[in-house]
Length: 369
Image (cartoon, rainbow, N blue to C red; front, side, top):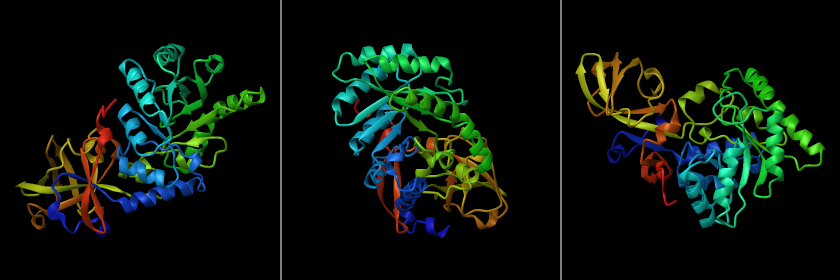
């Protein structure tokens, strides 16, 4: 706990998101170590941190390919030195026009997006026909999560051949997110990850044997990163591991990332014996999980979360007499990604001191385009 404490705490208002750059550096190194130092194998997602400074740290470590989910995240990446950006989303409506504007404004970046059907592909082609750019696309694959993507079947092969033969597209390969594979047991997770991706690898092999360039495969996220890290002929796209959180720390014991983002909150009331209230409400920590799985405090024991509202978090505690109004608590979010998106800025902690702030610009739906 001592390594997270802020010495000049009086300068930090609460609730606050604290960022520890030294630990981000560790996590970037760990991510690279997991792929034997081969930065070309990485396409890390930025939806967790949404911060230009973190993306720039990755670029400085030799990572040039990135994945994102929004136009704002894409623009942030272009401004921080990324050279290859995949918007891992099937774009439709006004987002297509915004994407085209972005592609033309940052023409030194290699842009790509996803499709999983011909209707969406046609919509993309019509929008890009107004420009001098040929859209780079990956076919989104459903490996069993049933959120987006095309299942691996004969129709997928036909979709691939159709898009590959269409001069309006630059089809590069497949994108497959297997976020439903979350077994804590590493061996069991490996078996499921292998089984899920095998039909896709077999299709890629078949196309290559027929003389086609082997399709690229971008696969996985943080949960299966360690399962795909040494898989040949794939790129990996972890994201949460840049900041890490309580949920994945419990779930993925073999991954040695460190918490690089904490929440700071203060006790604001002691309304009844055994009860304390902090200023960590719904607006400061992701609330999509049950109350017991929202935050874990590092400097408090024997407590239970009993209630939360927009600006308050209520705890039942055993050492009520020892807790004072104004006491500072440090908490690890259970889910860091939506937690970061609740904050406009993060307080940077270096050498135990609050030294400045980083804007979380890509939490916005729109920066410029």
